[in-house]
Length: 217
Ligand SMILES: *[C@@H]1O[C@H](CO)[C@@H](O)[C@H](O)[C@H]1NC(C)=O
Image (cartoon, rainbow, N blue to C red; front, side, top):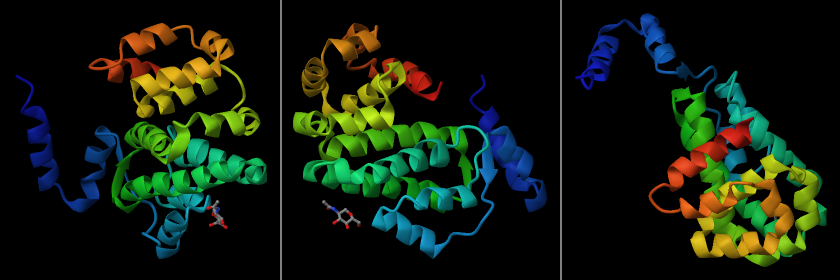
């Protein structure tokens, strides 16, 4: 019965003069870009430079759910600060993960309208995927750079959930192995770890949405 409502809204929005279209974007949670696309900003993304994030924020300043500053810039700068403490594998991983995540974020950057909540949710996914693709699933990365990870993320339920959210992109068996390697301290931080692995498969998205809530809070 309700399927046509979005269609009607789209139709109505199309009839509106440009200046009145804002309410439509407001009501769908989208906001218009506040700055132009900058080539300098795009170049920062392709080099994987942390400054890309404040640059993103200038074009799409998000009040709540500001992924660019609260996640992107914050952790990028933290890794910059501790960069020399990472081993070569860690350094290569940071470099590659940054470029990969910024390439994903560039799609939002180029959009004229974004929904900040979507940007945040999709970037948490994309970042986790980038971390996994570029070597997070190798135990040696976590093992040999453990202290840096701990100093950056802290050892608490939120950081454990955040890591789990990335490890899910390693596939079930590898994620299980890594979690086992991380040991009982990690397991006690995530009381519902068992359910997480049980719900792997069709229900993985549901399991993970709870985790995203945890990461946010
Ligand atoms: C990482 O990137 C920086 C800056 O682009 C570069 O100087 C460095 O050589 C790179 N390190 C590795 C291990 O790729």
